[in-house]
Length: 210
Ligand SMILES: *[C@@H]1O[C@H](CO)[C@@H](O)[C@H](O)[C@H]1NC(C)=O
Image (cartoon, rainbow, N blue to C red; front, side, top):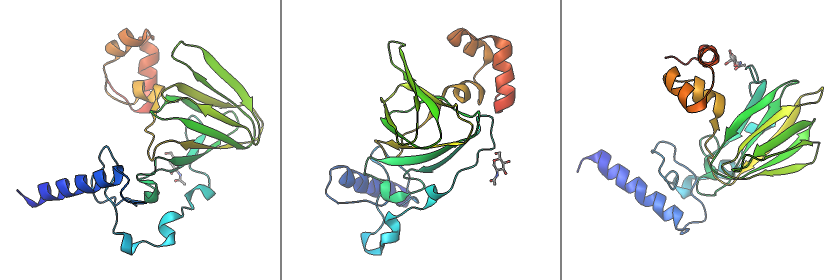
């Protein structure tokens, strides 16, 4: 057995140990590959309190994009202490007229409105939309797997946090799923009923092809 295989089996063993709650925490060692139970642990003897504190959400992310949406995430990849804890968070700064584009993830989300005003909503599996204007201090739960969105309807930037029941929720944005890759346009057209011209325009914008 070569060294790499031993390494992978060893990391799997550590991940599984973490999954069965035999340790209090398992700060991710990002030099290993991630598995279904997360990353293997850093040596606990080498941890300090600073491993458990993350200041990345004190500032806005980069909002220079078509959605005017700036996100900074505290997921396992940026805040390794979340590994194995089943929780994570992001900060969203939505510019005036900006949006959080329609997307879904595999876990539940809790939105907390820090400042500004936005319409937030989700669509359930019966195609029923639930949406409402959120103001400072409001929270809203977004059920796992549902498509959801937000629109800044105020005249100031809107700031919200989102907390997820996973250390890494995975995010599928509908528009970029369609337009930021090389899935052939005729297939997209068939499976979405969208117009080919519109698909090609979106592909051009988001760097897709075919
Ligand atoms: C923000 O993102 C844009 C678009 O990706 C990029 O051109 C720009 O350099 C980024 N700005 C900063 C400060 O990182």
